[in-house]
Picture 1 (cartoon, rainbow, N blue to C red):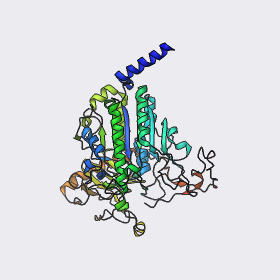
Picture 2: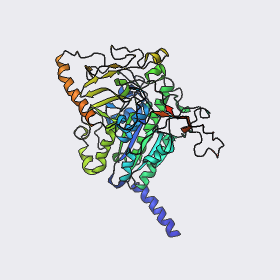
Picture 3: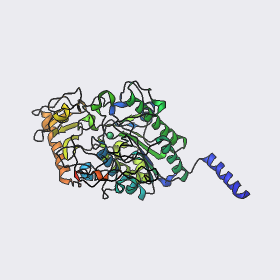
Picture 4: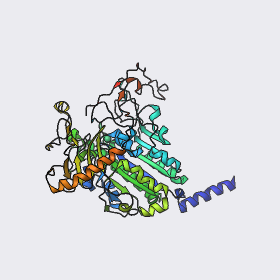
Length: 488
Ligand SMILES: [Ca+2]
């Protein structure tokens, strides 16, 4: 016993002196900090005038800023499905064919979810010896077969959908699980470091999605109101995670990627975030809907304080990480230069549901279709482009421009205001390249089975595991399968 105690003390001393063993089997750890409805213009480093994000700004100073990074869709669920599958929603099934060009997601009564045939990032990582944890919002289907544990995650601390309340709602029941996300993330990182087992932490905080929330110490801190309070608290959380990686001495073995799932909800007007200089916001395929506030951080591997202008989207992210996994040493060295390795220019495809709305190739973006939102919704008070009016762009019915796309130079005209004239030499030289990119994309496109077509009250979360113990199970209504209605 005495010998055992001595050994234990010795081991503790050894750990205190040397820290934990930290080779992670030669693997790079990954942390994705995914914000919800946070806009490109919400970070100090991206120009937010109130300067509420010192930790995110510091992250950018120590890492690389990616001003041209895109979500794969202007809405939560399809964007997240692409992040984890590395495939556009039109391929992974996170779209609807109920009506042309409509955004769809996974509300409580959705029948679909992430299909089994999609190989998600944590499933790939598991093959390489990683342990994966999601904290926060899943949003890829709430029925048991769609939940994170069935798609590669080892740990799940969060909610299947958004945190929509009230939680005792008898009509649309939801059982959220959410407490101290910061501490949860930190404990996971510490435990993995202690085991020297590589990890993937997917920190999907939803505090900036309506209904917004902030903890008491952060309430009233922002001049912007509750939305800004939530941003300040998330910034604090980001600071906690990064300082934990430094404290444990594993920053150089951990690539941290910060971004958002879609543009800020401009329709919320004073209650929402900012998309900076970009046109419109969430739900639209204008720049405000899909260009995200993005930072990559990897001390010792990414030169600090750089800005990389490169077209990259969530659909390419899994591919990027795969490079690090296949050949950790070789690729790590190679990827010191992000431009030469993975951050090269690729076409960006802007989809709204089943409709290819726009394409970006290099600095040029061509709109094949344009639409803000319907006149009917607009008259009911929903405006995705408040205070913004660009001819042929922010229109109230879907307009087809596929025969003569509306072309913009995003390097000069990031607000998509000044259409390049179709009879100009510039238009004539650029359009063939974009047409070729569209043809190449469509020729190889194999559409996934749409997952977001059918809804049924019976699949809602009436009686989740554990409800019996607290006497909160609700009776499951009879099945009533019908086409979901997507107004946008
Ligand atoms: Ca979102």
